Image 1 (cartoon, protein in one colour):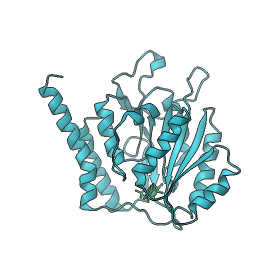
Image 2 (cartoon, rainbow, N blue to C red):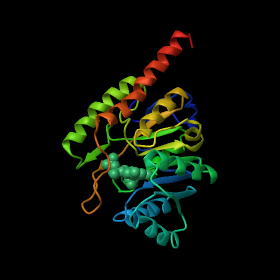
Image 3 (cartoon, protein in one colour):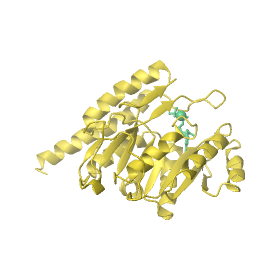
Length: 280
Ligand SMILES: Nc1nc2c(ncn2[C@@H]2O[C@H](COP(=O)(O)OP(=O)(O)O)[C@@H](O)[C@H]2O)c(=O)[nH]1
Ligand SMILES: [Mg+2]
């Protein structure tokens, strides 16, 4: 499928088994189903940026007709993140704060956030970072694409309209190369496998047997999406680098991280080969 568009169930083209790339969809019409969704934001020691993050996402959600919530998971922050969130909670009704006593990692925080979203009957979870490097103006693009019924919607830097802004050259090159390998091995039409800005049907996320506590949960999810035959599409998104004044990124390229990421596309190849060998 091209960058131009993808079939939506209400267009008569059921997306079962359909994977593809969709550009930003047209304006919402009253004919569109409006899925409810929760933006889930993991936060660890984000005292310097969490207030701006919450206010900006809350404003973006306030402009949408969908039922929404903003779930922030304070993952055992040692700084003032928890206190700032508690203050914001008193005035921002859309904000739900879930706190872990200790640090369970990015993956653990997303699982907690998704459980909360499921308990509140939200159709989708939209995962976003707490440093505003995922541009909140894309939240409405996700909302429109959810109305198309996809199971997994990936934000993509690597399709027409996507962008990488200010990210160090080394990290950009590794990302492009890693994503080429991952895309080929998964066999999914996803150009940006490693992007953490993505939305999933809450029920699909809950069905995935996710174990990763770190950032590799992003790759683990794609392995399960491929296995569970979910419908996948990409929408263009920009990713920028952390603003000066925030704490530095906690992502580290270590040999172990490469393996943690790569093992899922490799497992995906093996899984499909096994299925073929069994004639299924
Ligand atoms: N739950 C949890 N979230 C984390 C942890 N470290 C970073 N994060 C969050 O994960 C997101 C991305 O982190 P960041 O440091 O910006 O890494 P990068 O985006 O890969 O450069 C942000 O929302 C962070 O607050 C952690 O140990 N636990
Ligand atoms: Mg970041």
